[in-house]
Length: 158
Image 1 (spheres, rainbow, N blue to C red):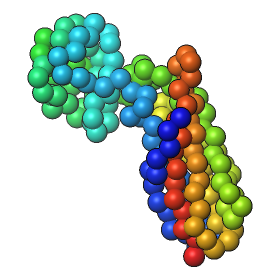
Image 2 (cartoon, rainbow, N blue to C red; image 1 turned 60 degrees about the vertical axis):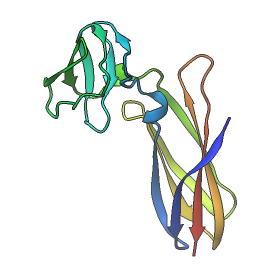
Image 3 (cartoon, rainbow, N blue to C red; image 1 turned 90 degrees about the vertical axis):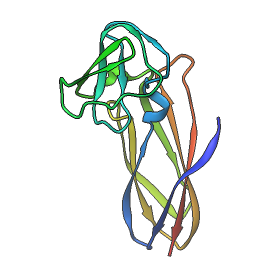
């Protein structure tokens, strides 16, 4: 397991704020230069708000295409024709199953939730005492063996 600081928060004593971490980069099937895809393979486009299904199989081009910004929009990419559709779990290589949140004394974690389609984990962090803290979020994914990563959120309470 690796750990890295992915977010910093500054709170006041008594604050109770939601923290959401997006794990899409770890889970989504993405476009790759010169990659082979079969008909009906699904990927997520970067910042497009859609996923894309291969209407024709083939090989991607040398540069990532300009993804359509409307549902059912299409784009030619090398020998593949991609069609935009609503985001679902079909474009994921693995699915976020859970996130274990851990905080030291001085912070309280509550309201934990996971959105498997968006690949996000959310928890509320309540600041109980002044100080500098680290909250650890440890997501678990559906792959076998399950991928487990550690992410740290630095929290300063004033």
